[in-house]
Image (cartoon, rainbow over all chains, first blue to last red; front, side, top):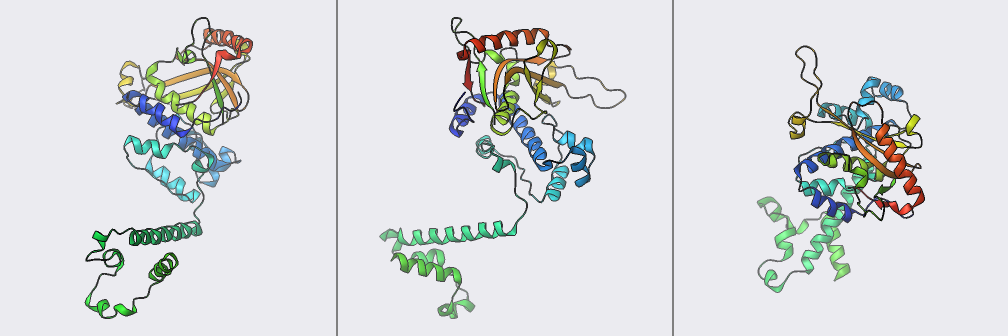
Length: 192
Length: 150
């Protein structure tokens, strides 16, 4: 049995693309997958605590914990989800989606994907920083990928980056000085 | 994580990849595949919610337990008789119980015989079939091939 582990994502997609043609199959799969993942996440939240200890911790009945950890349970309410999420310091993400989107977001069943981290402002700051940097790089690429036709008339600076002129900031345009623009100019000089 | 092998019959009779699930109604394949995918990629055989070692005439086998209820608007519930409740309460949803008999270690499992469990209290015929298959697999490992879900 060596070398047998979870299937590659492409195998999963290929297999489900065929099987999802059957409505009963895809409806059953979506429901069972969702119930199963929620049950496993509830079990993960409990960790080494007994059901009774965990119930006391989050102010619920023990029988409720048993029910929420049961993959057959389909009586989840949004109210319960929000309550558990508040107590565990995590977020809830629920929406109706098309099937390709469902498949895309449910392919990762690793521990990392099913054990959300407790709220940490630094991780969000890091995300924001990374997005800012990516936006800066994209803007820079746009500047250097302009075709001569595009450059005619309006520059990338004019089109994408220049602050919208208003009577007030038009007058003070020479003194526009934001960290993002400074960073862009620094990058442009480095590349150019 | 659990690495699965699926019983696929003897070579002389021609292999049938889904031989282990022949007694499970095909209309429940979506639920069965989703559960086995989660078992395969996320769980281990020591989780008592999903696995149970059998005793008595079934000793030597472990069962995978898959259970779910059908919603009232599910076309499959038309052919099921939902248990009645007293008074004016809504009828209970029909409960579907699937059992897959097999054997293995904490992270490896051979699926031998799956079936839909109704009201019968003992697994006699299912265990008999599964134990026969287990003997066959132990003699010839190729009777159970690596399989993945879905």
